[in-house]
Length: 224
Image 1 (tube, rainbow, N blue to C red):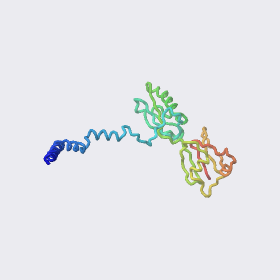
Image 2 (image 1 turned 180 degrees about the vertical axis):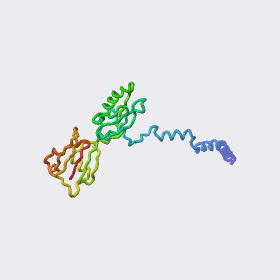
Image 3 (image 1 turned 90 degrees about the vertical axis):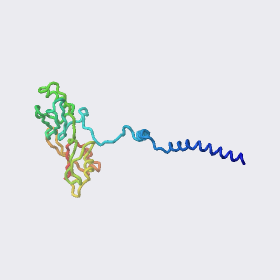
Image 4 (image 1 turned 60 degrees about the horizontal axis):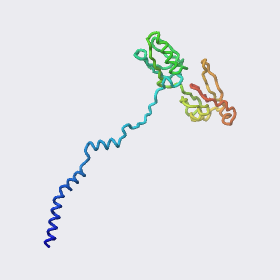
């Protein structure tokens, strides 16, 4: 009996000594992470350079090979010459206007060709001009569909497009459309307009396939 009592007191003594250490360990486990540790966790959860998609389209640069057309908007910058730097529209006649230089032909040139021309012309007034030409807005790459279609109007010509494609894009014919008398109105380089006939019924039957021509910028598809 005495030996059992001794063992019991010995166990209680050991428990009393160990309790502070156990409580301290439990308290440390239940403590919230330090601010430093939390910062590290957040940094791991978030990428340092998140890839955020953008819908912004970059302007056309000088070396893109794009050919400037009427109604395009150009940004012309002359280094250290703010009076000469400006944003200008290409007029329907293909010309732009700049201080000192007056009217300059822009239509039919690439941005790089126009840049070289402007650099040469400005040497008469500025020592060693540095010119940059960028197409900010493109309005010349369009075609028009008019007449008896469901959705007449201007459409972008950003890919290969035939007369059949244009008709489909414009929603098809209205009830009284004269599908045999369609034509494409095209302005030639000399300014003259020509009519290119298109007989819809023949083309879809495999006849006169050559009439289904590829459209060019500023063509007008007329559906009587």
